[in-house]
Image 1 (tube, rainbow, N blue to C red):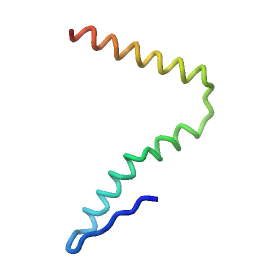
Image 2: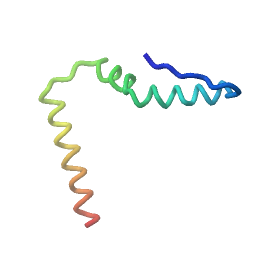
Image 3: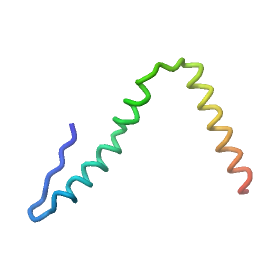
Image 4: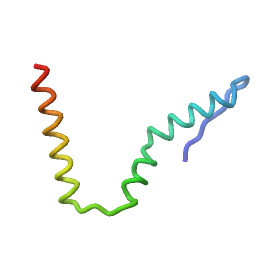
Length: 63
């Protein structure tokens, strides 16, 4: 559970912005989206390998 203490004299918009940042850092929404459809472990592993190859190729080009 995310708790955001509103300081005295602080606007509600500012507190809401802090709440949104904390919520995004927890990764709840990302996990919820990933759970909407089942993905086999082999498929997730394949996508991770593809991402790693892509990142590695970007690093090779810059060096």
